[in-house]
Amino acid sequence: MHTRTLGSDLRVSAVGLGAMGMSQSYGPNPGDRDDMIAVLRSAVDLGVTFFDTAEVYGPYVNEELVGEALAPVRDQVVIATKFGFRIEDGRPAGLNSRPEQIRAVATASLERLGVERIDLFYQHRVDPQVPVEDVAGTVGELVREGKVRCFGLSEASARTIRRAHAVHPVTAVQSEYSLWTRDPEPEVLPTCTALGIGFVPFSPLGKGFLTGAVDASTAFAADDVRTAIPRFTAENRAANQTLVEHIAALATAKDATPGQVALAWLLARHPSIVPIPGTRHTARIEENAGATRVPLSADELSDLDGLAGRIGVQGDRYNAHHMSLVDK
Ligand SMILES: NC(=O)c1ccc[n+]([C@@H]2O[C@H](COP(=O)([O-])OP(=O)(O)OC[C@H]3O[C@@H](n4cnc5c(N)ncnc54)[C@H](OP(=O)(O)O)[C@@H]3O)[C@@H](O)[C@H]2O)c1
Figure 1 (spheres, helix red, strand yellow):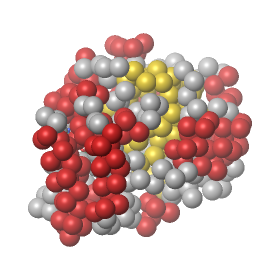
Figure 2: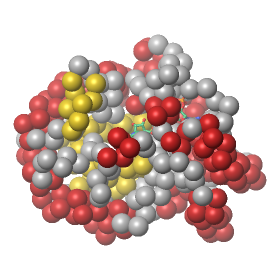
Figure 3: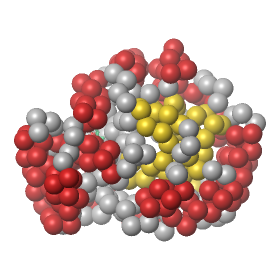
Figure 4: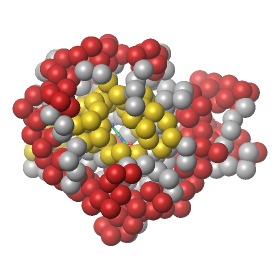
């Protein structure tokens, strides 16, 4: 797979792998822990060199899983992780990006990942109680100490990105972005382009919906995160199906899959965009990586650009609580 560059010099595969679903969010795993380690290792064999985890995934166990799986190929991969949630009784309980907390998480994440340096350390959510200058300053110190290589932000506004970047260079911003979630387009993406910051779309497959694998009849497990997302009520899934049918028709015409079209559209938006689809299946890693070989014509791109606006997506991408954590 070809590579892309985030920021000035973080080289990663054009499509990465999100590991979150191996520890939470999407219902029971299709296999045990050893199976997930095998899936992560198969990603490397398929050319993926960019892996995404976080302290809060699990919490904690996802970093351990990713660290163990990638230990044999440590020098060939880039591992991104995140700080910024307060974790109580094994659950996220608000935000905490105070400098001493960032330092404590860095130490613990290094240990759990089994690495000497965190390649990319994102603030998971902007903490309104802590000026982002203090966050950037603390991560900058960790960079100078050799514990962190690059700094990132997640779901940060353009203004916050500029403030942080003025203190320590931001290498990548990670926010939700896909054919049906276009929030970063007006301000965040132009800001990243202007400042030379990479952009990493999370949930690039619309939490599975854009692949066509989910429809109004899909029964989610009780702990599946989609049960709490307005866009995924049965009624809204039925309404949003038109979007997937359109993507699927284009995919068929191009001998590709709907998920590949969704990822190819993101890749075509800008050369420093690197999506991180999440999956627990090697075959789907291979399919998703194949998006790099799906060229979209100017007409196809413009058709996809206007799709969500023409059809009208029903339901918010987050519930009110999760929306309140997004930096405005
Ligand atoms: N910064 C943040 O706040 C934040 C928030 C959310 C996610 N993330 C990161 O972004 C990564 C990706 O986001 P996401 O997992 O939420 O959403 P996503 O990548 O849009 O979708 C994941 C879902 O799609 C399914 N899937 C993946 N490839 C498929 C394919 N080719 N065909 C059919 N179904 C497919 C997966 O199921 P299977 O696993 O069963 O294949 C899973 O249910 C996460 O793993 C995480 O690392 C970050």
